[in-house]
Image (cartoon, rainbow, N blue to C red; front, side):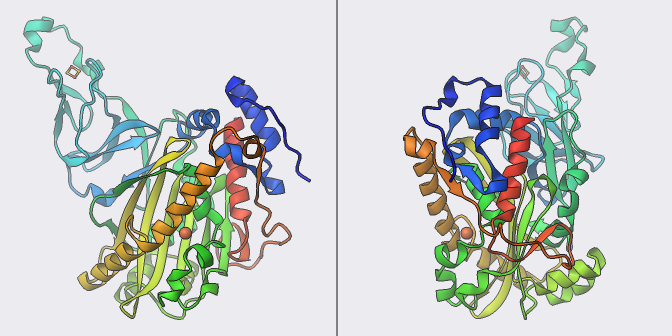
Length: 436
Ligand code: FES
Ligand code: FE
């Protein structure tokens, strides 16, 4: 029997008290995740400070900035940053704030610029951050303005296989260590060959708590046969039981994925097999050759989906990334990127895009299935009803099972996808960060 508390008011607690209350009540190791963590404003504030201001977060994909001078502006934990490819070809990120009086320097989503001019008083910065122009400088500052000290503020940035991550943490765990063994799986998703993003990422608002998205992708394959039951009825996958077969994997730092296997047909462009073999180990290539889908989450809020479906009678693969960006406890902005294997034929890319638009794009039939569920869970968890404040979700699925030892990839691996081990691992790391 799970004990709960009554009359707990998180809004009257200090940050330390909230963290202590989380320690007492969030018990992933027992499969106990309280509903209040999905709707509480104080938990949301603490997440921003302890998680989103501390960890690596996705900013975009390198193919969005292929040329010198290309830039994108993105949100990093609620703050605007400019990611820019300098004249030397390297990527840099800056806080999108003019160092004169703090105006937002760049208001475009993307473009190509060697320099940025502030819309307020016209200070001009190189795309490598240095302040290089101040209108009437000699006259109005008497030549005394120390422009060298007025460069844009750098934001820490690093990349892995085309993914651009940023962090506000001044002393972060190196990105490669943060990703750890999960790199082995990410390689198949974004490093199997040179990947490119087609079109700008799409953004949409969902009235959902962000963790529901991350949690769904990290370990919830169980919902597929019901929530997405129409995927089988439409003949796009063989049958409703397809979602159980395969493996679930998790690694340190809360990352995890679900690998649907086996797949008798190779759904990637066959002419790229030599490239795949060059970029992947033989074990990674073997796994990739057998997958029918891969769904996962890089902690905290980057999820990916490689989905193989039949469109117009032909099997085709599509690869997407999505970011669940919290706006409020009950609201997030979702950003979705669609990627293709850059050297695939135009026909393959077209068909892959068609399958993405039909299935898991913002307007896709199956994306709608998920966001309906996310919204309803969020609504049920909101507010002050005592039965909700003291209610615990059941995350005990698969606790009786032992991981397998002979899987070809790293991590803790279960021999089918119907377990909540990945979610327990996600919330365990979430709790560690919230208590830190
Ligand atoms: Fe940018 Fe003054 S605030 S030039
Ligand atoms: Fe789903």
